[in-house]
Length: 419
Image: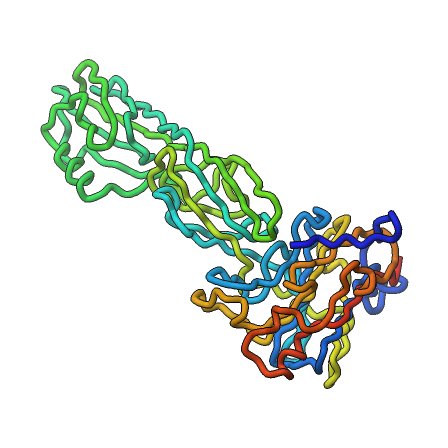
């Protein structure tokens, strides 16, 4: 990946963005305050059956990561884009649309720690997460009520929940008086072997220190007495070390978090913010690997502010309201990505088996610019301008299909309309 910052002499290109969209006098059509106009020209006429994307990264990290074409499987994501993308404009089948990107997680190896995942990571970059389970802290066992049990110790149980124990005056269990209710967070149903052990305690059994040993608990027996008591096991929590390796090629990032055993509820410090990881038992040293990719399901924000249909020409011209990107960041990263087809087949891992183009010889030269004044930037501002015939176009296609996605020129204009 090459990060291309646009400079004028020694000054970074800047565009100031403030305020919100409104109509003249507060009424009439809404006029954006700031707009972004994108123009891109190809070697041949635009093909409405091909796929054209203007990929935007609005995470405000000044090009630390940015939009990239997805070149090879088995992780195809949305079939066209990876790296850090927050929004994109698409053109296909004669229609322009603006979308917000979401990401999905796939478990590559659960490591005995992670067995399911839902939600989308807050991290805008795609890549691989490596989660290493550290110190596992068993939930405390506490005793409530009046009866024979004076205390309890959790030796190995990671199953949060509550045992209910009813005893008679001789300190023996009452028929049907022993049960277990798993906790909503951190609990699970008993296994068949555990349920058999529990059933064996129901009725006429004198409580002993090892009565709940099949569940990883030791009891302290006090004075024999009739009564109903509870033994409550709190959730087990483990520290987790996290290493995230971005697919954009930027440096790996380290963080920490916590997981709860037998849970799919995020902790206050989740290892992957935005995502819920479903766990079973946790083992210190266990390693789980998960892959984050752009999801094929993106959120449609609506049509662009203005657009020009190709109508047989070799160019796309589209303008969006900057407010569609949410709160303006200090900078944006942009890449133009075009493909003859979207590929999701995980067995296709050779970049030469499909035809695509983006900025740079390999498509990895997204452009980054700060925001601060009205300006047009374009292909000629780069040290190495975009040219035709990139090696990414070698896949199976006709010359006409290749020309339709072969980028020759581009420009981006930031301008103020109101305010």
